[in-house]
Length: 126
Image (cartoon, rainbow, N blue to C red; front, side):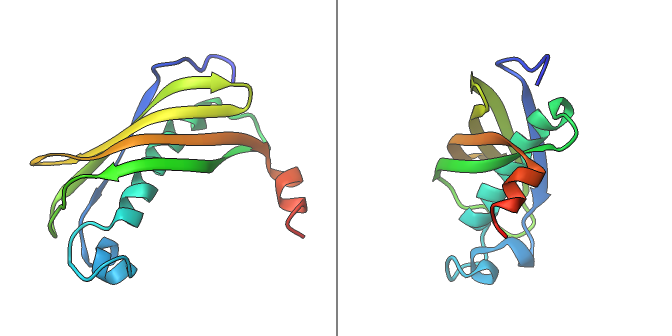
């Protein structure tokens, strides 16, 4: 991860649609942006931070997510998630994460990832 620095940021975007609502994901009964979809979007932003620095055969896995989903977003809303690297500890990477729609902030929290050797990681699952 040569060159990776604290403060590096990336974003991921989506639009609220029938496939990412609480109703369709089974996390609630309303057609609003689902918390599991918010988790996936902030993870995608964190992955974008690290992707340019990964060596061949190395990837990262999410190990911890601590978010507050503080506001609902309706169908059609555009969601932008941001991840900012705030800590590096060996193979452990911690991010400040957030997401917003056109009306303001909807998610705040932290996310943790670890870098792993793909072959070694997958061999443990067999």
